Image 1 (cartoon, helix red, strand yellow):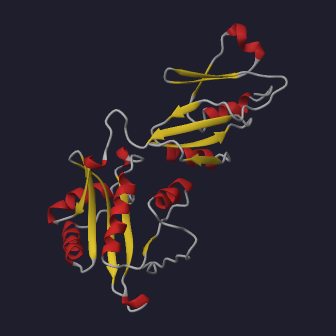
Image 2 (tube, helix red, strand yellow):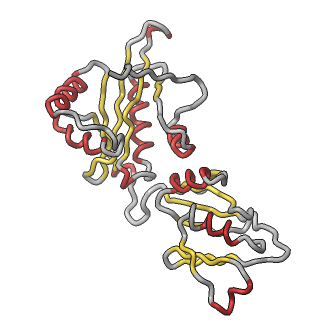
Image 3 (spheres, one colour):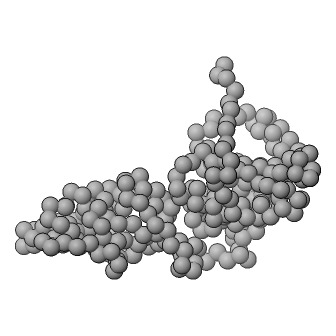
Length: 267
């Protein structure tokens, strides 16, 4: 790092990446630089009078939520570059404020207890699954006000009996981990082929970035193709690049159409 860069280093490595700034030994403080710690790992940034950033050789940090770190880097003004050449791993590169290259990575599944395709079961929800879906929805819209129980149960009955509507649940090792809703709509255009809308896509926040959300979306899209839909659409209220990339990884493309949303006037 260049001389005098300690405040920038602390703002990025502590403020963005979450590492803890640690004091250098008294005998080494005069040389400048900054040290950081994450668990048993320490990162030492030293001062070079003729500083040139390390743009190739770099440290790699394994993290629990690579999408969250990508969003934090971009929000801080440090763009990220994703790299999908490492099988089984989601990773990106980012430069620190001095141009040094860093890598942040996350295995696509928990390597201690891998979730294989045999571990994931996706099925249509039934009457008995109301509480399961409601539990997942707590991570979908945490600010939602609770509705009366009678109204919820009536809506659930209507959803399950509505023609063309399916609520899917993904489970892993006996635990519900994700859900989404598919609505297939009859149509007179495009050769009278139906189209579909996907709504209420949610993954349990404790198991995100393990592929469950992508798995249930791809499963749901296949169900739409099986009934000859000519397109499948969804909307997201998020502008986070990580969220948009999640939908792209599931097979969706952005920029084809422009979405509009209308809400009823306030009472």
